[in-house]
Image (cartoon, rainbow, N blue to C red; front, side):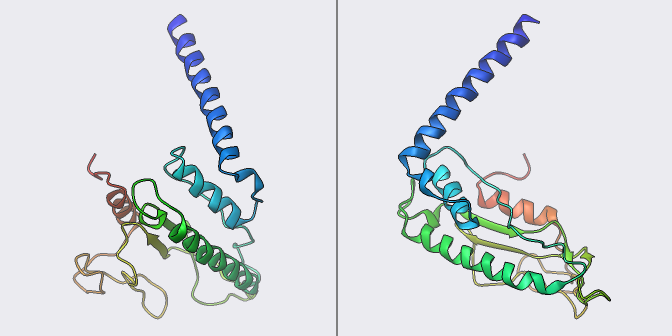
Amino acid sequence: SSDLADTRTEAYLQNLERGMEIEGRRFEAGLQDLGNSLLDRAVKAVELMRLGLSRCAMLAIPGGWDSHGDVTVQAPQWDDFFYCLANLMDYLQRTPGTATKWLIDEVTIVALSEFGRTPLVNGSGGKDHWPYNSALVCGSGVNGNRMIGSTDDYLIGMPTDFSTGEPSSSGDIIGSEHLGTALLKIAGVDPAN
């Protein structure tokens, strides 16, 4: 119909305009000088947020994490990831924010995977998929320097008292829905809506 064509045309023109604005801001912020390392991509994402062009970003951590046959490949990848995270946190601590003095007070970082790895090495020297996992959350809105939840010696999730974050036989297992609810609250979004 004519209305649908008009709507699609208007959306296309808005996307073109937005693309030109992003490109101009990217140039203005000097983002074209950054490379494509994980840290460079993280800084680009943060700058797009600072410029008001994005509210969130998802970055894949490079490497062969699906290590069924050789778990030793993960050690240098973890080192690279934590090096990047430390440098990103430093960048956020010294970069002026838009609503606060520093970006560290405006950006929340979440590092997670869709599944964990088995607690024991398999016959091929690797680790297989595991339903229990962890997430690292830091930055704005996070009450840091603590761990919430726990696992037993076999890396099976233990019940947690949600009011304290401590293990409790009368608590519940932390699930992805709980993490999602917490992140929505940090972002100022009512999870009930």
